[in-house]
Image (cartoon, rainbow over all chains, first blue to last red; front, top):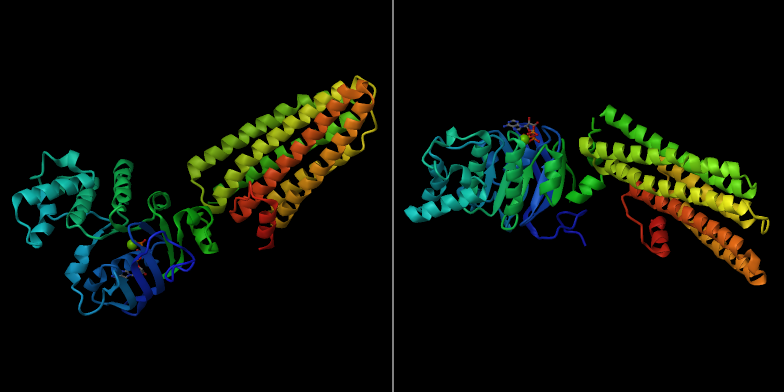
Length: 263
Length: 226
Ligand SMILES: Nc1ncnc2c1ncn2[C@@H]1O[C@H](COP(=O)(O)OP(=O)(O)OP(=O)(O)O)[C@@H](O)[C@H]1O
Ligand SMILES: [Mg+2]
């Protein structure tokens, strides 16, 4: 029995996102073509594909980050928790809180390490010192950064190394307790040790969160994800179990891409 | 990626070379028995080290490629298959050596009976090996399935030879030592055919990504039908 959203693949958990007939455009240029997919909840989904195939566009659709681009236009449906996130009644700020995102380049605020994490909570009206302290520590621990910064929380976030900044951004994203975490090439600027820490964190996160990660590192996709989607020229070519994708993909083009014989 | 393709082709060549050496050893081992040629038998035993050396080389090469290239999909299945095939080939080489040892012993006594079924069995087993190497090179699933089926024929002949030799032993206890040695040889050939079958199963895994080891014959036939 296959899911109606992932006809070739039967995920272990029900979908957090149901996406139907998704087309995305930047002005006249179409970046996504009729993408239909169910993204399983409490599971890690990896998205792979050559540069410019629409991975970032797709992942940004999931929390309406593309709304910020004036020429951007979208057709089709994205249901999150059975609500169409593009319908008029939906509060974008709330969607972005529930669906957190970490980008390729770490982008901490030019404030202290502590404030970077406390900020999101203050916006939600949480101001009690002990609650803030507790959440800051817990988030930093989850992001595997606490031991490195616990004695310098008042220092500027920008004084941290790139890898530390990235983990700070992850801590900031999880502090507001989202339901979904989106990662767009989170490790591309990190060394192997920091990368391993973030991969451990992603595996830890999937117990409670739905995780979607875009990566150019195939081994990373293989290590952290349960299912993998392969995009090419704006189309979703194959969505399948990660084991299957890396041992015996169903589509010949997927095979060519992951074995490095593409194009 | 062209270099990687060359490396894979090189690995394939080495397996073929190893397979042909093993095939030669099996052929000569039976020849040494039938023609009572102890010299040839000793020669086969002497050259087994070549097979062993290739076994090690292929393993090292495959492990190196896994570590350096992190192969995926069909590349991964090919390398894993290569590593497994060599251990079957290496065992087949050892069995050819065992046949030679028994042949040397048998050649020191008068011949018990003309060898008819043993060469027939050897021919089937050798054919299975040659064809499975071919199926591996050509990625031919039909040939691989066919090899698995031929194993039954070899099993049938083993039982037949055993019954015939049992008759000799009951008739005349002086034949027991020789008859047991010939039974051993039949058993070695049966094992050789089993290894060829293992290789055919690995070749199917390599081509189709399905693990059919330990499946029943009916299940395999159902798969083949698909
Ligand atoms: N803000 C934008 N304005 C116009 N076109 C854009 C914009 N962002 C992306 N595109 C175009 O949309 C297509 C998909 O881009 P996208 O960034 O989604 O690809 P990607 O798969 O994430 O690539 P990469 O692996 O290089 O990050 C590309 O052709 C790109 O040029
Ligand atoms: Mg991108």
